[in-house]
Structures are given as structure tokens and as C-alpha cells.
Image 1: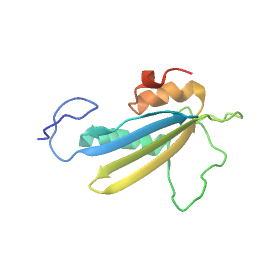
Image 2: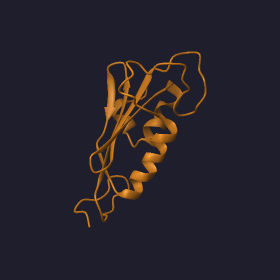
Image 3: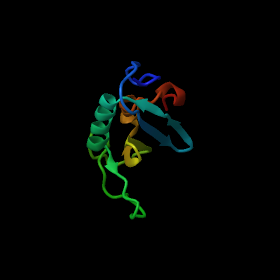
Image 4: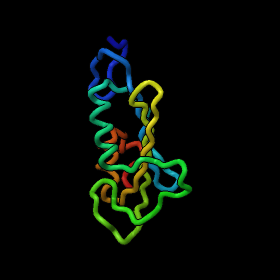
Length: 124
């Protein structure tokens, strides 16, 4: 059994911890967090990341092309001022990186989905 609890559901768990580092950036403001997860919560978070965000491809200089909002999946002719980054270690040393953009209306629900403390950055 782990000596410390999963930081999402706050209960001690058996097995190795998975680590998850979500970040949202708007201009020079950012919110970031490090979370220790149990296997079940890690699977849920991984599913969300794989569905909502794009895997980072290090060989590409830029991944900017016509994108949809990572949260609501709608095309917005305006820009998406929020950048979303996630680094996760789902197993031992297996690192996964994800990226997406969201517009202002979806920033707060995206932060909640990523377990980021929205009030630390404050509504814009």
C-alpha cells in the first residue's frame, strides 16, 4: 500500500504511483500542478488527455495548424489564447506529452478537467 494517498481521490492505494503534470498558460500567467495518482485515476486522466489533447511530436518544430478547441471541439475563427500542456509518467519511465489550445470560454472547465486550481490564476 502506498504511504501517501492519490491526490485526486485522497485515498491510499496499492501499487506504484503515476505522476501527472498539467499546465495552462495565458500570456505570462500560468497554472501548473504536480499530482501523484493511483492506477485507476491515472487511467481516467490518461483517457481524457488522449481524447482531448494532441500528443506532442518532438520532431515537429511547430504543431500549429487548423485546430479545434481542445475542450469543446468547435472551430473558432478567433484565436485560442490558452495553451494546455500535460506531461505524464503513466508507467515507470514512460513519458507522455500532450498539447492543446482552448478559447476563453473553455479555459475554466478545462482547468477543472485537468485538476488545476483555477482560482490561483483567476478569471480573466
